[in-house]
Length: 255
Ligand code: PGA
Image (cartoon, rainbow, N blue to C red; front, side, top):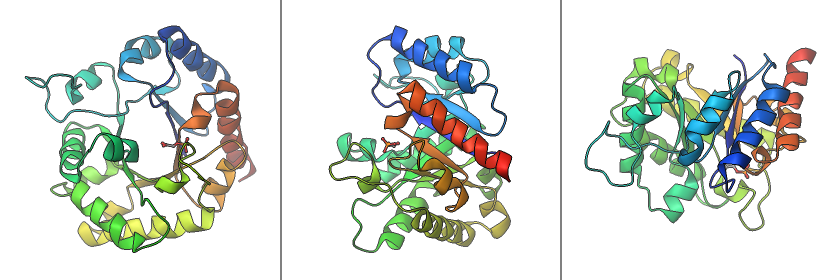
């Protein structure tokens, strides 16, 4: 399985010119790397321009609305994303949960809409503090987000373990350790197995997010056995992001 590297540009950059430049730079330097699957998720307003400036790397989105169309002011539907040939869509990011009040119920509808239309939800789960029953809190988020999903849909699912305290823009943040990320990924897979079955749970890609950069990405993929990474801050700097992709391709060459 090729590691999946998803660039979450969040609410950056400011202009379409900057967005296209960033995408082209990544495409040019990393588009030929066969060892990973690279997805860039720009803000919605830049999807058209970024989409037409890339061929080898893929276009993703940062959110979705669960209906195909209709009276939903301000929303962007799964059908509109499909028009741009988007498959990977970030859902339930902690910044949306915290700043925009996104609930587990809304996240569940988004995940089901994507799975139901042969798209790939990149479902984000994470605890806000290092204390407390983290295993339980992740289990609750996972069970609610996947309620009503069918086991044959799990092959399209990506789960991101992204502890909120590890996100680079949060005060005092630092990345999790690869060891801990690995332990959490085992827990996530155990819950998926209990909800569905072993075979379907094994098909889910589990990736890590939270202060991933070109220096630590290899340890998350190698020691942490993560199947990919979700990258925020380091993905809006083309030089840094290209070295991150490079670091991943070096591990696969060493295997
Ligand atoms: P970060 O963000 O890489 O800047 O920590 C990751 C994310 O929030 O998706």
